[in-house]
Image (cartoon, rainbow, N blue to C red; front, side, top):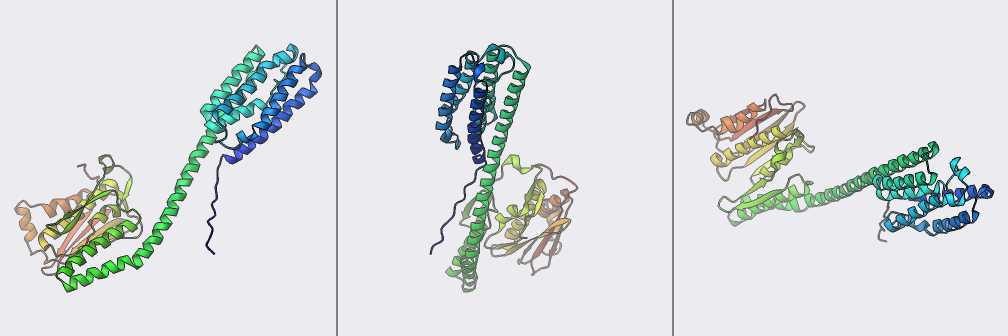
Length: 408
């Protein structure tokens, strides 16, 4: 039998709406009970009876309106608040002046707070402030003078409704954040599942085609090169969004894939750390292999970009001096106190004395683009080359650099 998906819906607002519905019912009964116990003291009891008949009918009929935010419309809120305010204004007509001056309750009594709370749950603290202010004004008009108990009750409703409205806004924001986090978690799990399937099938086939094409040569070698580039692109895609937004272009003459990573200028030298892997991943290609830790490699943003630029300069030297067919390997090591990046190639190596000669001729690629960058970061760059056995550049950067990299 196919599995049935069980959808669980949750909302932090639902208990609040249920509590509001219960509050409206209980306060309606409470207001009627107050009227019944003081019925003989009313000057015009028929006004109170007529109002309570409307209040009961309205409260029972509008219970579905306070079931959720969608049902609780602005029109309903306005009508509900109007009934509460009307009850307050009718109190002097129904009750005696002595009881009102002595602090007697209004006709709707604490049922009015339910109307204000509906505003708070629906629209947050701003809506609650508007509704509670209207109730405060009408209460003061009904009493005639700002008596102490009236002011106390008005301030209590005003503060409580605004506080509840603010809590509702915070809860809604938290709920949206949680929903987004759950979506990301589900997408990550699905991506990991697809990555496992692709790794066990497509990537292995592409790697085999690349190796076999290099052995056979001719048109098969070109096919193997393309398969290698697609392997790198697919591996990057399933790695979980390691790369930022990038542009990919094909240089037909050199037969190389060039990636230009777009980094906003205002983010280039922010103080926050950046994952070094995201900056080195674009250098991987058919002839450049990248080996990195499975966990993020955090570095200060400026230091990470300078280190990545030094790696790029080392790869430029490989392409320029070792030939188009040379292969290169990038190894990233996350040590306790420093980050070590090694760039190695299988080219012919650098003849003895060539670097010193290049510096004397004004060619400062290694001296400035590599060693200079690392020196500014408080790190070091060591170059080891044996003629006929390739070249190895070891770049070391402390995790807490002694000097900040200068802005470009």
